[in-house]
Every structure is written in C-alpha cells, then in structure tokens.
Amino acid sequence: MSFWVHYAVALATVAAILAALGGAGRLVQRARAPSGVRRIDVLESVALAPQSALHLVRVDSQEMLVGTGRVAIVSRLSDRSR
Image 1 (cartoon, rainbow, N blue to C red):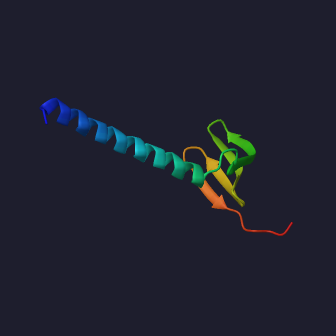
Image 2: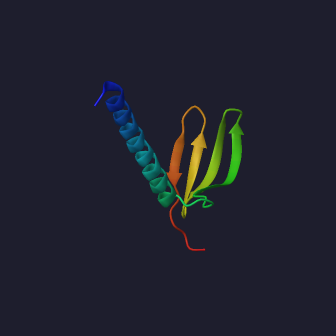
C-alpha cells in the first residue's frame, strides 16, 4: 500500500471510532435524564441582604434549604407527613 492510502485508511478508522463513541455517549445521556423531566425546582426564594438569599429547592423528591452569600449552606429538610 502506498503511504497516502495507508494514511487515509487510518484517518477513516479514527473518525469512525470517534463517531461511534459520540453516538454511544448521547445514548447514555438520554437514558439517564429523559427529556422534559425536570429534577430541580426552586420552590421559593427570599433575599436576606443585597448579596445573600435563602432558597427552598426540591431535587427529585427531596426538599433542601440553600443559603447563598459569602458562604453557601445546604441543609436537607427532614421528611414530614403532609
């Protein structure tokens, strides 16, 4: 085989491998997070000062308080019957 034919075959092989890996990555990503499903909801936010706030957030079925400002604080709320 000539140099250019060998070079073209090697380049095509690398391109096919990269395309296959990219396609597999997209399939895995779709399987993990179905489109249209939101996992994070901000239920309420309150400004405490110009640079800090308190947020009530639901991640999946878990509710959390998130404090933002110079220091960020996250606290998981305990389950309570409704």
